[in-house]
Amino acid sequence: MRALKQLVRFGWEQSLSCLFPVVIFASLAITQIIPLPFLPRYDWLLIICVLMQWWMVRSGLETRDELKVITLFHIIGLALELFKVQMGSWSYPEEGYSKIFGVPLYSGFMYASVASYLCQAWRRLKVELVKWPPFFVVVPLAAAIYLNFFLHHFWIDVRFWLSGLVMIVFWKSWVIYEVNGIRYRMPLALSFVLIGFFIWIAENIATFFGAWTYPNQTSAWSLVHVGKVSSWLLLVIVSFLIVATLKLVKGKDSTRVDTGQYFKG
Image (cartoon, rainbow, N blue to C red; front, side, top):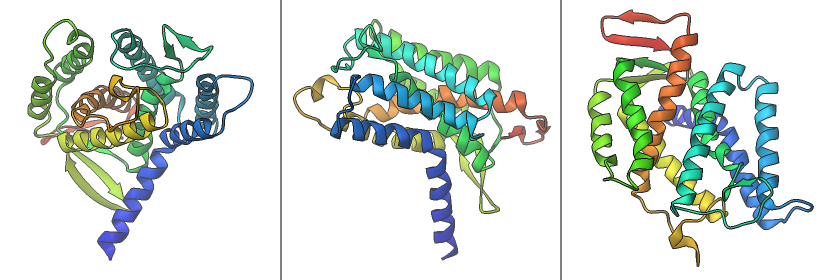
């Protein structure tokens, strides 16, 4: 029973951390079922996301420093969207005043919601990292991961090599988190896989509600290929690096112990 209670509490904390993504999913569902007046759907989604972001900061659920991180990931995601849509990887078929080169501006918030989740979960679960690899190793790895999303259209796709490299680099790294006063730990590489898997589930929900459309979904919705989990796993590395950098820079209680680099969230 105690283990079950801990699991329920962990799920509750995770749910609270997913507040921004939940609002996005709810908005996608509502605007698909109930057409809103005056503006196209994509524009309403942008307004909802902007208002939600404003409320998150205004209510204190996000700090201004976290907003900077989330905005950075918004820009990174939007740049990726602009490129991928031009390459035909997916599309946004509906009309909208806030579309730039075929990409609605609300799409950046879907990436930003991942960073929002990480910031929220980091604080709620009192995350600590043990044996975080040196940044001179992690930063080039994250840069290579991001660049591969662009370069594989013109060169070979090295995502699986990068995934293997991630496992090697983070093999000895652990994430420590707290649930109801009890500390647990998990291999950091496993946490990347789990987050990537749940984002893939969220991607299926999002495409079902018409957030965007893959080429094989133009005539009818179908399940997103499970291979996309690897893409999301790699993108999580990029967002995790950005959030971890913020926590390391801002955390005044950073320290070094004999087990390796270690810092609190």
